[in-house]
Length: 219
Image 1 (cartoon, rainbow, N blue to C red):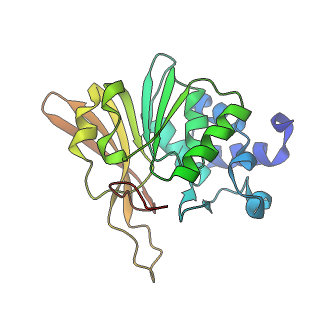
Image 2 (cartoon, rainbow, N blue to C red; image 1 turned 180 degrees about the horizontal axis):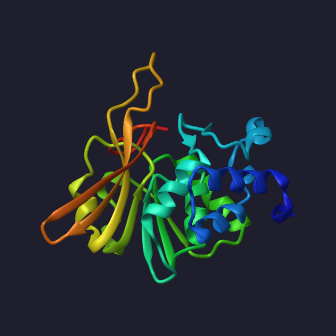
């Protein structure tokens, strides 16, 4: 049913115009029914190229940002990917089509359970989910070929760098939080490659993400 949704096709065309060229990434986005990842109140905007609010003060990322992040990770079907911040589950659902397994951590119980329900309904077998503190990563499953942060940090936690394989890629929004009066793009989506001497960094695009917070919320 979703394959022929004209809104999906229009979205993929818009992403192409914005410079997304990886055919596998575009195909994964085209096959992911974003309307199933947004609340009913926003279903009319599910295929707009914009971020939308979800529960717990979080957001579902703009499809363009999902595409840029996924393209930068350069995943293949043999890889294991750690995602920090499951949120709605949309980004994990896109990644799951491109790699062997996605390990996704969420600190909000309600979001974690809802994402699990969606993965089950969509019959996505290769996503493992965990309720936990993203700052700790998932040491029992480390090391990972790729790591993606879907919340902003001023610097990447050392625990996550240590869970990345040598030569592995980590993508994260780096920077301060937006001033409440100023919705300017104040973070840089950054690609990092773990080398023998440290991290080789490349800034990709300006973004605005919610902050990555340590510990577990009292919800």
